[in-house]
Length: 365
Image 1 (tube, rainbow, N blue to C red):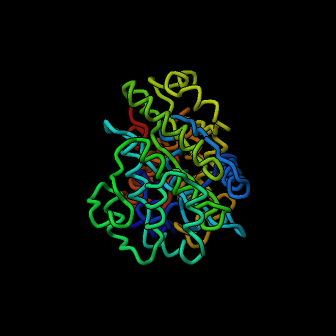
Image 2: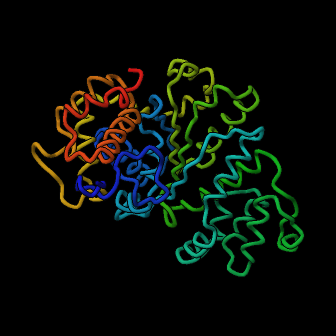
């Protein structure tokens, strides 16, 4: 027996993120989805910058949200008919130079060939815009060369990563980027350039995942990260939306946040989106949406069969047995049930079958 006999194309209960963005879907939890959508739409249409905290326990869906709302088709749909946002996912920096690491992550995620083509196509006067957004002559010249079709793009990209400047010295680049302020000034100026009058992009969206790791950073790094966040909001003050994903843990609770975020950063927080443990009704909506999504099933099931191949009584028992658990834990349980049922050649997953392998599915609980 294989999964096709359950009228499924593949196992919908992913335990690891998909590489293919087409396989990243949203199921259930409409309130969280709506809150994030409203924040993005507001930033698309209003020229301001906002800092948002996404807060919840491990496995509650924060990382998945950042991946879903980083998809180009999702952003285009939210933006229409306005200009699309530019979105980047970042991981919390673990190195001794956190600002440089965040800068490098951002540069890594930019397709400069595509970006240059888009800027050249849309803007007639990139040099004039560079003059408006920065008074730093080095940063201005870097921006002008990035979007100058006559400049070798590989040379300027190598420079951004700390490469040699000899080929660029004749074009006004006389020193390397070396300090945190250099990296911050370049990133914020680039963001301001790209969102100037919302022509190239309407807003820059940054997601920093695993931000709770700030609790195990040393004092110097905590200060540098706070400075990075504060400077992003202040220096790219018109069109930046910054999401910080924080996981509640023994080392970090919402009341402890003040120990790690300086007042200058906390005062810039505009909203906190809670990723709470799912209740039974939310889980059922999630499961129905997931199992019947076109990615996994061509013809959706309705009525009593809407959870097929799971009987609804099995859904209820799993919810009762797992209790107050994360969405990831529920995904693990249903994935195991599905895989075992395929192996044991079951036609449906009923209460009798669930009871027979319950210990394997629930484990220590």
